Each structure stands twice: as structure tokens, then as C-alpha cells.
Length: 359
Image (cartoon, rainbow, N blue to C red; front, side, top):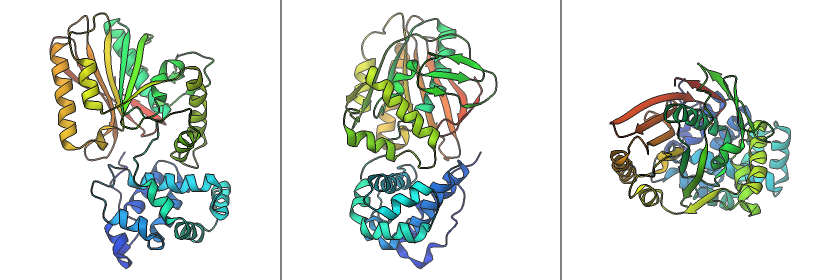
């Protein structure tokens, strides 16, 4: 399913700023195809009104990196959502509450009045921490458990608030296969294509993560930030977040502040940890790394793969966009001392709505 290469709906030639950006209009098509018509309308209205917010327009026009990979449009969408949730702009709050109205007029006025506040959001990367993505991870862990019969240790890169580290505390329906505590407040049931994963139940000995700027779930503004990044017309995602936050109070995730590459090198250094399968996992993380950082991460993993043995296998699970950004794949790279295997386990919805399982 092609999501990222649709043409723009707009002709931006009337504004030099929009001619350089165009990113909001492009992303509006993406979110519409992902089933979010309200956010699509918001982004289109914001694209048309960008000249009303000169600070934001300059940031879009002169963005130094890849606007799509850096999720610039999603940062701006979160900024507008946060403003609507704050109640500072009554007309914008009403538009979001009703899901319809004068998109162009309301959003243009909000952008004129709050240009500086919206611009400040663009300086910070997205923080979705989408727990529905953990269904793909759980399916892969069941596969690894069936193969090796070993407990797992999870090492998550770019863990944000660490909500996905709590995946053993969530309940899943994976193609009709039920797993996890049935009474969990977090119930994840993606639309499933293909055979179900193996029935083996993973045992997770430990789950830790790292993030450059980990989110403190005890901080109200942090929790509000997570809510802002949920698309406003996606009630299921909002409910998943609220439920996962409740689980996190009882099971605080272990997320360290740091650079992922040296952190992982430290975790995987030294002799293999016998009697467990170490699993390096990340979702929508690699796109934010520089070319040099990606090479350094690959080097750390390759060195660790070379040290893996049957009593201490190493797995790398990545839920990431493909290079052309036309689909999201769950890939597994694996070593147990007899060479490195690579598998395309599944193609997935970016936010976990469906999984096309290949196994």
C-alpha cells in the first residue's frame, strides 16, 4: 500500500514559503489514506494559511533535514492539537471538539495569534509512543520463544516514555491467538492478515530503554505532550494511551537518558549473557538518525552478532519505514552463532491498526 508518494493537493506557487515546504499538504494525503479525515483537513487548512504564521513558515522553508523523515508535519499537527486542548484559543478548541466547521478561518486565526508558540513545537521531535505497535513486537517475541525456548531481555532504542517496554502487561489478539493478561486495561487487537504467530508465551526477564530526552510520566506537561501527538480523531489511540499510562503507574518503565549507540554498545559489550535471548527493538527510530549514526549503530550490532552463540542468541527487531517510505516493515535480524539471518516478518500499519504477518 503506497502511502508516502501521493502528489500534493495544492498548487503552492502563490507563496514562496509554501513552494519550499509543501510538507503539510503532502502529509494531509497520507493521514487521509490512513483514515484520519479531520487531521487531513487541519493540515490542508494550515498549508493554505502558512503565510499567516511567518515564524513557522520560515522554519518549514529552511528546514535543514528531510521534512518527511523528521516528521515536521506531525510536529505541527501536534502543536495545533496541544493549542486546542489548552483552551487558549476558544474557536480552535470548538473546531476540535465538534470535528467540523470553518477550518480555514479558525486555523488561520490560530496561526496568526499563536505563531511563536506553534513554532516552538517544531524544534522538538515527535513523541508518539504508540502502544498498538507492541503487537508486532509481541508476535516476533513469540516466534523467538518458539525457536530458542529462552527468556528474553528487551533493549529499546528511542524509547520515549517507555510505554512499549510494558508490553508483557498488555493483552493481545494476534490473528485469533490470545496472549497477555486478559484483565489488562490495554487491549490490543490489530486487524490481522496471515497465519497467527506461534503460541509460545514469551518470558521477559528485563526490559530497558534509552532515549535522548526520555519523557517523565510523573510530569503533567509530559503527559499532555503525549496526548497532543495522538491524532485528534483517533479515539482508539487516545484510549490506548490513557490505559497504558494507567499501567505505567503500577509498572514504571525503565528508560535511561542517553545516546542510543554508546548505550547499546555498553549493553551488548563483554561476553554473551547465557540463558537468554537479547532483543534490540525500535519503532520509527532509525529515520531520526544521521547517516553516521546509522552506520555506527549497524557496527555495534554487527560486532554483537559475531559474538552470539546458541546459548545466548541476539535478535534485532525493527519496525521502520522502508527507504522509499512506501510501507512500514517489521524486520528481524538474528544470530545464534551460525551466521546472521534476516527476515521480513510483517508489513504493518504505521500506528498498529493492522498487521500483514509473514512470519
